[in-house]
Amino acid sequence: MVERIIDKITKFEYYDIVSKKYHDISNMVHDIKWVTDMESAGVLTFSIFKNTDRYGARTAIKVSSGDQVTFDWNNKRIFKGWVFTRKRTEEDVYEITAYDNLRYLKGVGTYVWSPKSSSERFTTICQDLGLPYRDDDFDTNRSPAEITDGKTYFDMIKTTLDNTRQATGKRFFIMDDGNGTLVHTSLDKHRTTLVFGDGANVTGFNYTATIDNDTANRVTLVREDDETKKRTIQTVQNDERIQRWGLLTYAETISDKLNAVQLRQRAQDILNEKVAEKVEFSFSALGDVNFRAGTGFISNLSANLEELGSNRSCYATKVTHNFGESWTMDIDVEVLPL
Image (cartoon, rainbow, N blue to C red):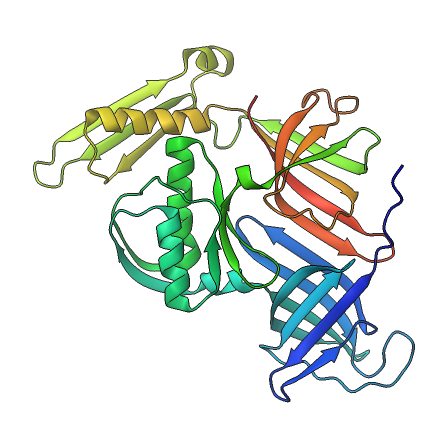
């Protein structure tokens, strides 16, 4: 058995934008929590003693909005971001919330997009906002032209990510690499050989399977021509799932200029995504410094979770690291189809 590395903070530093000085606060910080989520910015929350460190030594510290925070754990860079929220308690403790560079994609803007892929929209937005970026896996699927008034930059990119997933089945996403660079990447780039299963790191799990929310076995799409007002309707269905579950319908009116064949294919793509039983799966495990939202792994909980079966390919949609005397992770999971 490989001996586990001693878990510890190897660097926790903040840069004071007022004094323009770096401060080592490793001995002052506690209650550290790091969250990555495929749907939002990475966030680091922590508390610090204002006037003394954990050993009782006197300190003088002031944290301001916009201060830079860097955090290394076991000699690996975990987080680089900026203070957005600070709270002060009566016990002279600061409670700090810092976000990585993905937070700046919550800004609202206006674009007139020609047909572009998620990679192209991502690149344009990062360049316009002056954010460091790279594209690790280029998306070749182009979404239709669109005017995006009053949308967040993240939502502008997410529209194309969703379109590509629906059209091709490939899942792209964006992340911060932990050092401030935004990355356009895919699940294929983040598959690992990690196995979580019976007696292997997992400390508890929750599992729900449902057809109650977004499941559909018949999909109808309607397109109305702006000039002639003629409506084109395409309906597709899965007879086997209708027989098993009863009729679960979904209908949508779209504005994209698609012909009848393209409209039917779009309906089929939506059906393929909605016809599956929705599985919600989460578990807790011992900490792993390489594990974050987007990480692919194998679930092997068959002894305690026979519904999931063994050797199922999964990926993490949200990961919360709880750093402390016992370092644990809370992981939300999407199970990939067989």
